[in-house]
Image 1 (spheres, chains in turn orange, blue):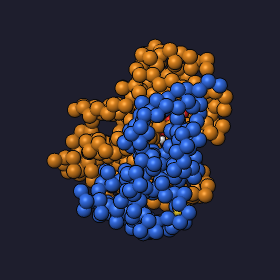
Image 2 (cartoon, protein in one colour; image 1 turned 45 degrees about the horizontal axis):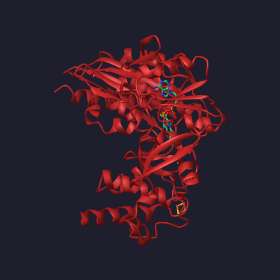
Image 3 (cartoon, chains in turn brown, green; image 1 turned 90 degrees about the horizontal axis):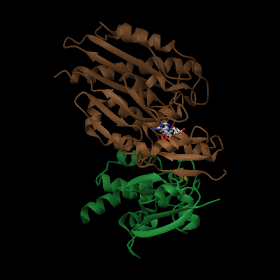
Image 4 (cartoon, helix red, strand yellow; image 1 turned 60 degrees about the horizontal axis):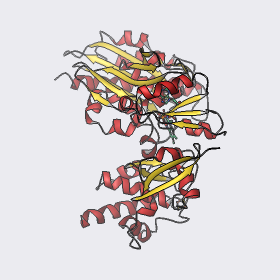
Length: 292
Length: 159
Ligand SMILES: Cc1cc2nc3c(=O)[nH]c(=O)nc-3n(C[C@H](O)[C@H](O)[C@H](O)COP(=O)(O)OP(=O)(O)OC[C@H]3O[C@@H](n4cnc5c(N)ncnc54)[C@H](O)[C@@H]3O)c2cc1C
Ligand code: FES
Ligand code: FES
């Protein structure tokens, strides 16, 4: 590696000249570094400038509002996991991030880094998508807001320009009767890459009828698959066994999963169905508890 | 190549050093500061041998840059014992024969200290999950977990 410059701006304003420089100097945003530093050491990424965003207040804040939840892009997953209110409001989003790596990795890994690394198997994105997360993108000309699903465009690629950074996520606070969940399958109990990951956000009414649903699957395609057909199937039902079986079958037909040492294509298709059924049940049970 | 000047605190002592931007905190600790208690197993965040505490949070020092330590509080294995008096966790690792080659041991002890500060009375399962990022090729883990739970009991008793 040639000599790399390192900057740790203390504010978004201080980041602006650095982002402008990033238009011409190959640069990388440094959050927890749990993807980036490994990629740099392997020679896969060769930035000449690192912009460490962890000293910018807006990026490390977690604000639980009555209407919305603001999650700074650089909040470590361990901090998310320690926030009881976040667990209550967005359990699925927390589940996606707290599954990442070990205690040590969770002390550093951030939701912004997970999303911007754009791994097809990234655990953070599916739940952030079903819980209708919006991304505030900051650049020299101000901010723009896009849905989480519009950030990753292909493995390792995002829609952010060279002079932009992901500032924060904004989630609508869940309504009564609404909740989310995330489940993944890995061959071991801890520390592995998702074979398939599925997130669901379910709203139920007092009669147990599903009134709104969102389902998204990770690791079965280059980017997260949003299963709008499954969501449409669920709405209006009581999420009975037959409906869930039909949802599982639809999930098994989605995407184009790879075959590797963690699982064959056939296995991934099947697991996608199993996880879809289970995760809808978990999200629905949580949603029911939030009716009281 | 120009080096960056870093001022930080390690085990309570003010420390200054020069490092390259791409140098890990682990490399700085071992090669520049000669604090060789912290070990390198993988350099990819998988083994936990390089565990240190950074502003009170357990991290892999191989996945932290030396320049990121500016203004931080770092605790390494060298700060665990009180002079020549072993910390209860160290004592219990010895008594339970929770080590063989010893490469993983500093990481386990630093991680156990972080665990017990957060949760003084962990169940066996909680201890195993918390320490899942610390790998040991020799012991088979059972003796390590026994040492961790013994140390927890002793530290609760002493408190
Ligand atoms: C041992 C180990 C186990 C792991 N297990 C898992 C796992 O189970 N599931 C999983 O999904 N991941 C896993 N990971 C990968 C990694 O920890 C996560 O993807 C993590 O969330 C990355 O966050 P970070 O803050 O460390 O990102 P960084 O490494 O800092 O950044 C990742 C990428 O995103 C860019 N970036 C970061 N923040 C921003 C921002 N705010 N704006 C614009 N660009 C940005 C960086 O430039 C870089 O390209 C594991 C890693 C390790 C080392
Ligand atoms: S050397 Fe850092 S985790 Fe293995
Ligand atoms: S004692 Fe040898 S690796 Fe643990």
